[in-house]
Image 1 (cartoon, rainbow, N blue to C red):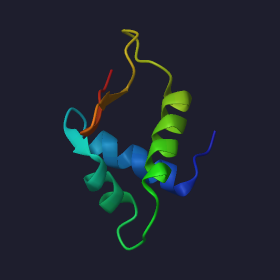
Image 2: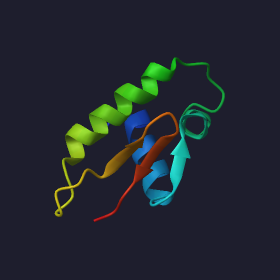
Image 3: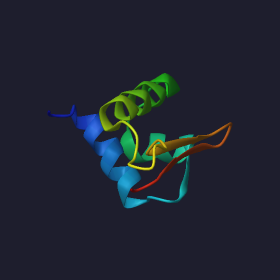
Image 4: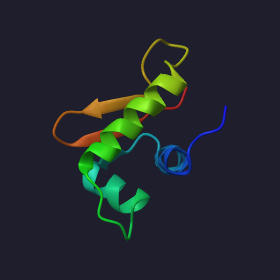
Length: 76
């Protein structure tokens, strides 16, 4: 399966910073640095990644949502 370019960029950005809380602002600036986009783009892309990745072997999601703060990527 191939990923759309921004979806791939988001995955790489999160994996390289796994275990760290990534704010929505940090993710937006990292994935769309010179472009004005709706925050919904991030939400949609995170949702797509979750569907593609499924859950880790321990049953927990790879991408954790930290309410009102951002996201954290957990490696298996």
